[in-house]
Length: 134
Image (cartoon, rainbow, N blue to C red; front, side, top):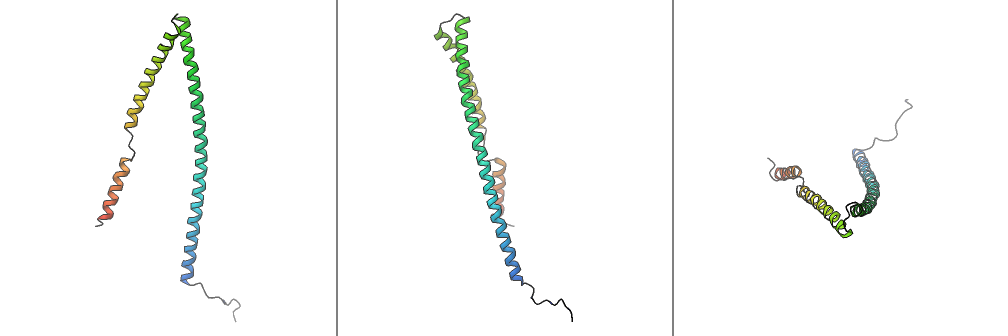
């Protein structure tokens, strides 16, 4: 008589499919948890970066104020202009430069499309294809 007689019956197809479905569900849940954790990590990094940028911009703005004041006093000292005229000249020059930069940024911003044109076209084609599958 053979010694390796199996006393258990092989698993049914239904139990195998059920096991596969359970494994797939568990895999999807783990992937979602991983994605959530990665998004949280990236969000935290983005917050730190944004804070650094904002603080850097504030420090640069303060430096710009001091440099502008320095230019005013240099103009007053070396051009022998009244202090009010020096402030007016430096302020006017900075206002013109700021206006030019603002206008350039405005023109560039008007070129930005909120909906990517190629993606919109592809989505339209997909909707048409789903409505008329031939």
